[in-house]
Image (tube, rainbow, N blue to C red; front, side):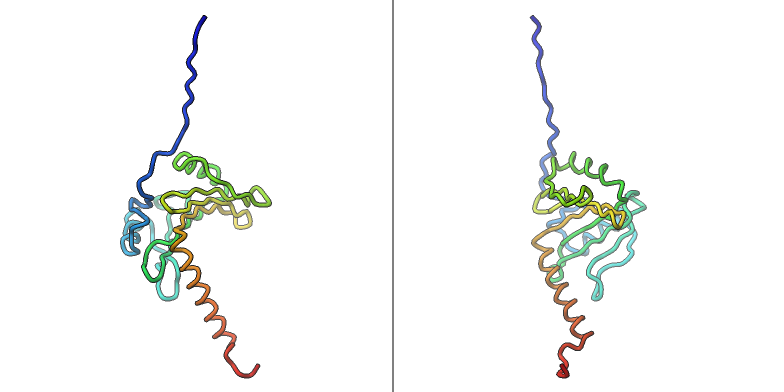
Amino acid sequence: MQKYLLVIVLLLPAPLMAFELFGVNINQINRVDLRLAIRDSGAEVVREAGDDNWYDVYDMTSNFKQSKFLFVAYEKTTATFAFAEYHLPYDYFRSMLLRLTLKYGKPRVRYGNFESENRHYWTVDGIKIEITQNWNKNLTRLIYTQPEKLLPLQQAYRQEELLKLSKLLNVDGSYY
């Protein structure tokens, strides 16, 4: 009688000490150093955030052929990372989902009404990684967020937009 040994190999992601983008720990980097790391990667600056802009925009086609653009925003008061978002071709979704699964393990899925509305996501070292498809924009979005920093940024953005709208509409006018 022959005996067989069955070996099952599980593909588990390597343990991560700190979450990195562009070779830097995203949880401990400031805006100046992250901008430098992104530029050093070969990205071309389209626009950097300032008084009128809330996020940086980079053309990534020179070093990440599948990416159209990278958007990066920082929490305003601390100038620390809040989010980064890649725009990728719509049909690149499956390939990128496989790459992320191999790197971070099986994702959690938030199901939408349609297949293209599903959101696959991971949380690594406090960073939420999410990949989605936007069929109406023919786009795959790969998003990295630092939730604790994103919330104050979103609140400040809403307040600024409301202030602009109230000035535009002259809401303080006494005529109504």
